[in-house]
Image (cartoon, rainbow, N blue to C red; front, side):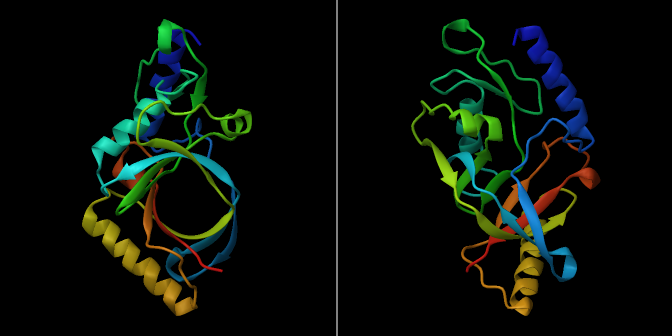
Length: 206
């Protein structure tokens, strides 16, 4: 894809992102298998591929930066994966790599890791290996996740309250969790708050 076309598509994505429109984005495939109180949804996710790095928690700019560099060319194929804000990224040697639509959500725990999920077509074709230390590809097996959707700005207090609701609903329903809750973000930071799709989620035990 030439530079002009790349800019045109990323500009359109940016404008749509302000209004919480995710038309261009691939999303991990799942089936909603059960709905609980307070809007909590139990989902069965298919296996998927992600690029991840170690993170210090919410708002870890260094972790986000490493993943951002991977999807904008810091990989062995020099492929470019568009974000929701205009980005120019050249492949090594100045040639243009493939342009791959980024997926949502971005997964982030209170500590541990931050993940970008890769499009199905990229995973099927073989995702390019990262070239930066601390960035790795991971295959996420099929799993069940409980998720609670909310809108607005994602402050630590707002996230903690939603995690509290999620935990209480699951405990009342007798659902065993396999790890701590994490956050899934579907929109760029500049999206209109009441149109944002935010989710707190937790992986479920057997």
